[in-house]
Length: 338
Image (cartoon, rainbow, N blue to C red; front, side):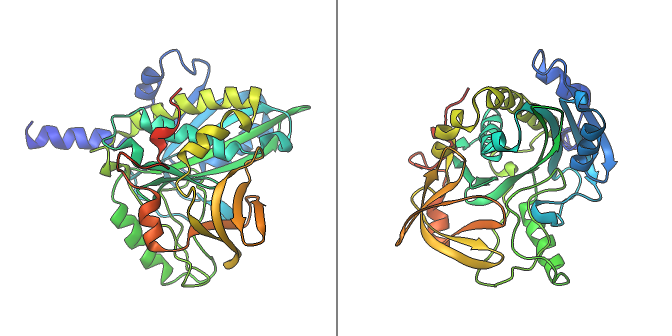
């Protein structure tokens, strides 16, 4: 292949093709709306507004090459460049109310890992999940999830799931974060989930230097020249199946798969709240509500998501918690592939 052809192929892989997504979905999601826009403020906010006006618009997927007002967990800003990350939101209506959504972010993580694993990855076993809503690749943050809700009528609730996946240039992401951190003093820590705002990490200064953010990772390390259109279609297929199943069975149907993909299973961790250590212990699994089970000196604790995040106790533990070896006990390859 000559240089011109290589350049054309690379350019196409860095663009989103709505018709290409639809073609790859085939009969799946036949009635779903698929939208691709060049620029918007936030795809999550776009779909939340639409659900408030008319919940019957769902299901709909909205992806954008550039988002000017995207944010992650707790309103943090995010760093990305067009083509380096895939960022989109999905609106859906589920039965029940807020209580029935327990564990939805974890089930979404399972679907994301399964969707990525449907692609021709060189090391699918290098993928894993970090509670409550991050996807890891060899211990680095590959993707994040942010779920927001809106009432959708009696016995129904509208959800907007925002997802961002790093595709390329993890080193550049880290450099932009470091540069932004030099002028930012009003945000703390690293977000544990992602709206369809950007790539992997917020521009933030940790409240305590001893609590470093999870470093970024990019899909290109296990999938050369990742094609945005193919990645989006693979994720939509798995997310659609997950949402239908979640609506019928709840998180219990995904608990075993999540624990098989748990990157920190059996590792010594620190649970952090508002930039301060809340507790130390050993990560076990999750309960039926999606709460993280932690073994401490004072007994087992169940931690609910919210203003808390999880870090490994040491860098060496981080290196061992999620590798791409065939014997990785906490890898995504142990999860079922439905």
